[in-house]
Image (cartoon, helix red, strand yellow):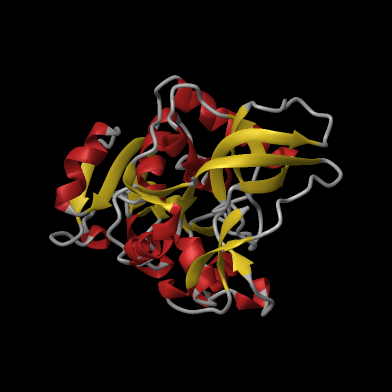
Length: 313
């Protein structure tokens, strides 16, 4: 099969397409013929070696964590049949979805929403599970709560706006003015242009502050949290770990870190929302697999509106 690989950590140019052996289904495995995969910040961080304590120094390594495709082989005696359209997300730190085939476990899969294209479906799993698990599990969101999404125009941000609305919250979106019309269409009740207004000095109060972009530390956000409000980060940094540890047993304001996990029930949940038109994946651009380096470079600009998707020939 054709797959995107890299032989050393480094810039986007280390990425190339190589011929690898097709994955054979092991016990309880499902092999998926990938039609489209998505690029996430996680992919670029791993490629650059930021998480080599987890990814190691063995090469070649592959890239990609979420995908849409068709079941090609089944060995788990579960509910999926050969030829069935599915979506999924890999756990852990070993990306493998920017390839013609990928072997996955049952808990990493759900049926593909029939209303979505392959590209839209591939853009759904990682960002929707991150937003859902952050708001529901880490933030314990309740209907009527005030939620701020910092970095609302990116992949996780656009999904967090929509999922917060699905869960009954009032949403303030922080992003550039050029994205305000888009995030309002997705359900944001108010928009803040980060270039004009410092949200931490705005005088507003929030039950949840979801720092998707990762540039608002817990201490800076505390003045705009309610007495029992929660700050949620996506960034694996020592200062985030420290804030989480300091507030682990706190009854007042809390700091939390979201580390997304694959979950079949959660995938099925967001797939139903997408099928019903309650959420939609936002795509910035679609690249063919042989332009994977350009796709990574775009992701690294930090000015991507929604998701970047890779089509697999």
